[in-house]
Image (cartoon, rainbow, N blue to C red; front, side, top):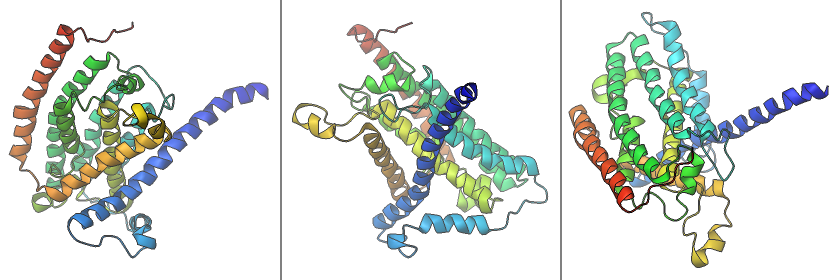
Length: 342
């Protein structure tokens, strides 16, 4: 019996940790849709959800029940296996990346030394769900939406990679916890502010959010890659999209906004801000970045596709490459290059 518990207990602990991460993320996804409607309604002088539950707080639950009760329709010419697997893949990839995300000091499921590479790899795989959905639907509108998404995500991942390189030059580590701890003196959003702005714009494009929601393109592509989806298959795409928004916001917080570290952590402010636990600061910073996601959707019209590609390849790529060179040169000249421990 002792040997049985020796084997089973670590599995129970790991499963409990995974559940403790996934449940808050899913709740956050549900109420991000509510927050998005409320923020946009305030910006556009509308009421937003107000009828289902107190202050409309049960609206996400009502939306889920509605989608769960709808009929699943698979087009006659579609590839059923790929058609059904695409939204599942999109949803799962949006969750597995949280395995390396540090929520606080020593509060991470898997504290691997190549955490930033793991995140980059998972975010790069996200395009496959969209391509599979567009191809398997056997619809020209969906297929064009899938092609658009592939080109868009590949284009902006190049800039995101170079931006991550500038952060790595300043820290000398691929470990996400060490990247956060390297910002105890100053958050990287201050010295690398242009990279922070470009990274934010790039994650808008990476998550197919307005003003870069061209893979959907309702005006010309009906609904883009998920035109043929309904019920819970459609819901999985929505869950994946909003979960990716939270994930990308968390990556931005870790790389540029000090992760779980409190703001104003000096002088008379230090005792006050340190009363708040690190995970709370981490969540508040994610909410701050998500507010800008919603703000961009409410404030800016959709780009044309040629404008999107020009921005990624002719502006962001040369600028980020130049900034990598400038950052490396400055660190070398002033002797600020971090010591790399083998």
